[in-house]
Image 1 (cartoon, rainbow, N blue to C red):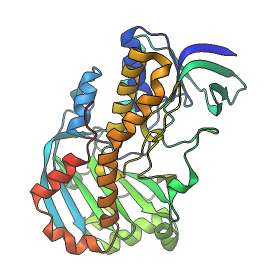
Image 2: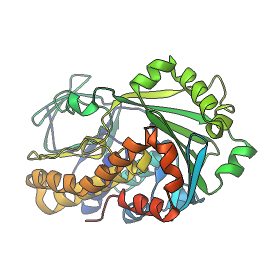
Image 3: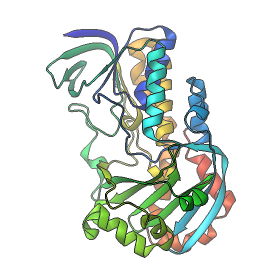
Length: 362
């Protein structure tokens, strides 16, 4: 059995942010990550203005991620459209790039990182891995993202009767895409789902969707769903037509949008999607992951393992407003009401909603 004062499970955004905080404070810790190489998680890739502030506090320069800024949003519902400037500039970036930069900064500051370590089960403060190893930390930081770990799984009821799946496909660079998405993002609303489109630092366009299982089943397959949506929504169809038929469509099932971990447990910090899952149309999922890691590290520095329970409850309260508002917006966006409400969406109202769905500072 291996002992460590602090064990971080997961090397994504929440885990790396925690590691940076603990390394800066000079506190001993260990980060374990299941992947041997940094992948490209299914994600919209949107970093809000508030998230850029968190990154700056962590020592990450947004220009190293993508020097281009996102300043406007275009929203479609059927054949209708609304445009608005974002409250402040944002950034679009691949998760591969962001995760690489974040983990490199943690390692530079002294974080020991062990890769290829898959945590299979957590029983109290005993952590068991796929290769039979056992860890016994004094404090546990669970940053496994959307993937649940046995013994710490989020409740089945959080997924709902018609659970949501995340789908992602990359569109190869093209002059038409670059001209359309230069400085902007698109959000396409449809029955039982929505799709976001953004140009990322590598020149590809990231088409990321959240769709209810019933809608996918009605279409037959992810490729057939994209084809059907392309015919149903001309603005989206223009980009669907550019998708290479050989391009992989990545998927993740049963995303519990709207869920929060409200109760705390001594010595255990649940971070990122393990703390709360905001509907992805808000574009604040990465912001929540980074904010949770930074805040949990700060709580641990000040109060040690005993601070975990109180911190978790406080962080759940911070998530209440953005997740609550985003959940209401999502209900409208995924219904037939979206098309007739969209003309009423003035730019000022879109900006109010955009600001209201950001996680607040402590």
